[in-house]
Amino acid sequence: MRCKGNPVSEGLGIGEVYSYRTMEFTVSSSPISREQVGQNLAEYYRIKEKAAAELKAIIDQLQREQPDKALIFMAHQEILDDEAIDEKIRHEITENLSNPTWAIYTVYEEFGQLLKNMKKQVFRERAQDILDVRNRLLRVANGIIAPNLNSLDKPVVIAAHDLLPSDTATLDRSKVVAIITETGGETSHSAIIARSYGIPALLGIPGLMNKVKDGDRVVVDALDGELIIDPTEEELAEYAAKRERYLKWATDTEAYLGKKAVTKDGVSLEVGLNIGTVEESRVKQAAYADFIGLFRTEFLYLSSPELPTEEEQYETYKQVLETFQRPVVLRTLDIGGDKNVPCLALPKEDNPFLGVRGLRLCFDRPEIFQTQLRAALRASAHGDLSLMLPMVTNLDDIYQAKELINTVRQEMEEAGIPMAPKIKVGIMVEVPSVALIADLVAKEVDFVSIGTNDLCQYTLAVDRQNQRMADYYQSYHPALFRLIGYATKHFLAAGKPVSVCGELGGDPLAVPVLIGLGVRRFSMNPSSIAKVKRVITHLTIDHAQELADQVQTLATAGQVKRFLERELKDYIC
Image (cartoon, rainbow, N blue to C red; front, side):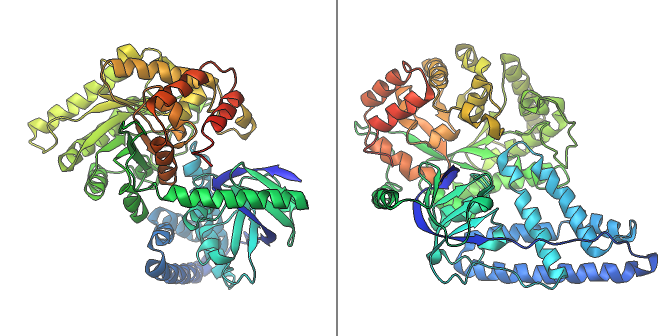
């Protein structure tokens, strides 16, 4: 049997299945009496203190052995200490007369749903953290010892509905051949842990736990996104050879991490990093990048029930500049009506992808935008900072945004607040309307960055979060490359730098085409840097242009992908 999945950590694993099932708790809603409020509050705090002690022990251990993993549990500690959550639980006990376990369950469920309802997968997957903390509290309340994956007696393929951070805290990586799950995506903790350990991982396999059982022999192909259950001897031999080829390729590719991104004929390109927070692992990875091409600021708004203040934002932006010591492109607030953001109380929209999101929200709530602009302009005194505007659809958007920026700058100058004498302002090219008037837009901006994820979505009229539409979301569609080529040509003709910060910007199969279209700056997730540098160093500009010309003559995304795989087979896995 063959099943499709999302390959989130490259590699190929062959082994026996170990089914890992997390504990499920039955929580009773039986009410308490008014006289029992005091003792039930005390019981809640006893549960909370014991959970906090467990988290501290995990954090202390990981800080000694794997400091970057400790950040996950430090975030859990923050959730456990969150005043809004604590206040709601106390209210449930004191006013609604709920017992502690029911109060914990309902309140954490509410906060988890807030995150699950958000548009971007990265934020929906943060609901895992809420669930993990909730399960820890419920487990402590029931006196159950925490399960773990540190006592595996042989190498196995771990199969699970999902893996929470606490499941993987003490994972014995030497005994894990691969990870397969029913849920999870590129930014889930399962994916993050798997990539950091170099474990092949295939996530999002529908009905997985009903398809496999303990002891089943499987092949996890996290290169082409396939799970093969009960493979034949011929298939085992085929995939064993494929695995050996991949391991050799991966070892060779790692050597390119510290190299400069220079083509075979001597043209220097720039490789940047996409970040959302300042983490130790990101700081290390930045050593191999030329700039921070995308600093996502929305995390500040999604991690708190209150709007981040100007001072909080300023300190964060300043920290990014001082920590990375590289040019930073700060994308202004990019959230919208499809997310239930606690600090904004946005109304529900029938078509959120076409609604009040990105820059539109900033115009709708100018006081929020102006606060962010003040913080960013103040931070610009501490490094090379540029502003990038998301969800721009026409020139009026640019005019209005620049007017707000100039107003804030003038007010700050009059108040004598230090900032950079000039700050570059660019836009995200995510909507076809802007790409098609690139010659006019180029006169109004300092630079552009092409967000290929949304540009693909809007060009092909596909909701990229809808699993049922996955086959229609075709990132190699020739129309997308034609559109990128058209926009790039006009921006470059006006002397405006063009970068790509969407998924295609870190895709070694697509980067040669983008180079052929004129792009010279790419910003990507850290796991893509070595792979992209490898393909760049084996490429000439003439070859890239030939690839780009040919791709634009092909009819389908499938034809494009097969053509590129054939042409670039010596440089990609």
